[in-house]
Length: 168
Image 1 (cartoon, rainbow, N blue to C red):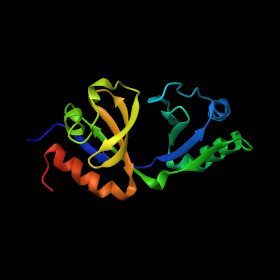
Image 2: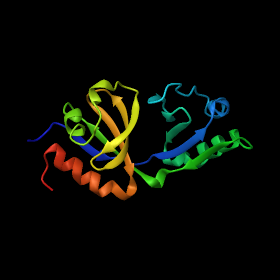
Image 3: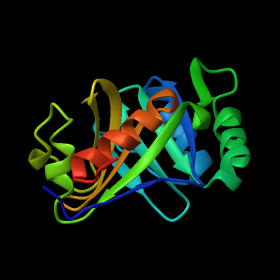
């Protein structure tokens, strides 16, 4: 069976991993001039970057690759001397875009989560096709972005193509 979905590798993005307690959030918010999502599994998205809340003390900042150094510098300086971690993880992850009316049908073949319960602007982590993944819901039902460890990128790319009905 073939599904109406377009799968593509994401390019030109940077990922910065943030870990810290509540007191450092205001520093990071000031550095980026944005209010971080307060609830886990939600995202704030603007033209310059996205902030994904993965846990109460864990976020990803996603920005353009050309902005990676500047955003990293601003975030690091904002918590200098504090108990917090700012780490560039761009090379550690590969992102995929899954778009189309059958995006949920394709993703449900590999995710152990009920994706119908996730709304636009949410994000989550879970088991996906025998590896771990982070999922950002761009538009519920039709537009998702999936991040897996780079070492699994070829496997996941092939898996997604087979799941959408392509022959490899």
